[in-house]
Image (tube, rainbow, N blue to C red):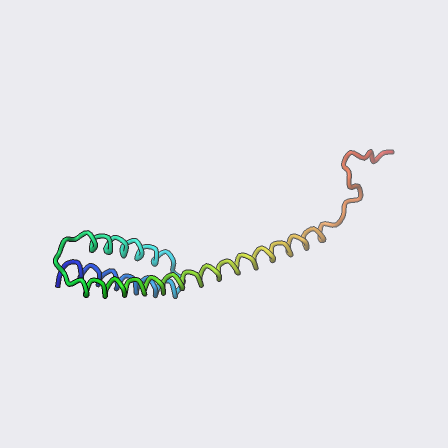
Length: 117
């Protein structure tokens, strides 16, 4: 098998691993696989091996479909993180309101008011 096809097969395998990592929520491992997959794909496209264009197009098509799945999973993670951050922001507002109520209201709102008369 030509070197180009081997590199594309390795890129496909890394893409599947990346998808598994994203589904598990491990974005740091997924990022590492993404960079390796990009390097392999770039290297495969730069090789000058004589390969069947149909085989190469088939593998590139499979990579494109896999990229779509990876992107969809990343969007799910993004929306989940966005929702979690919004919930945390609301919780912080609620807790700060409780803290303000627990401190009480100062007798004098202005600190420059002379208390002695």
